[in-house]
Image 1 (cartoon, helix red, strand yellow):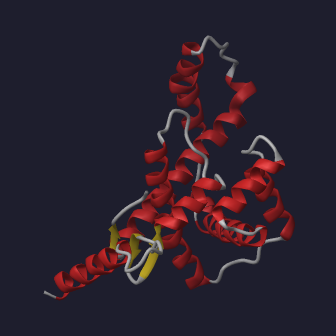
Image 2: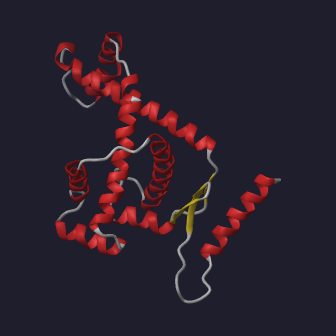
Length: 215
């Protein structure tokens, strides 16, 4: 009964947020994570500044839904980061990531215009970047040491999917000795992402996440 009442209350919050008592537009609730609220405006801001990359061929609707899912995942992960203490991030690391975002635009002027449309300052974007980097640092500290890639993994990958994909693209297949470290890095990246996905799923299972809108 308690959970049902809580669900109704969250639905009521979303309904009230979507209504306007006057000509002024009221921001809408995109999702709730326990008592934390994500708004549609936050999704709009992330889309405007291209904070998350848009996949090739991905529709704007799918992109905005992906942004919402990324924001939910980030919020859940950051809670865990805060429990153990978020690392301080060097300013040059923040500026490097900010530069990556800038390069998603054709020119500096386009990026500046996107900031204006999103109603964000550069310092606010830096704060978003810092939070993302703090999560990434935590992941490297907690999960990266758990990843082990054996020689057997490298050999089987080279003989199987890695070589097959290169042949399908019309590319030569170098001998294993020339690409061993490249394949090791690919396997490590895949295994690390699997650990991140498992961790995020566990965090989400322990939270009360409700999605209402993303556009």
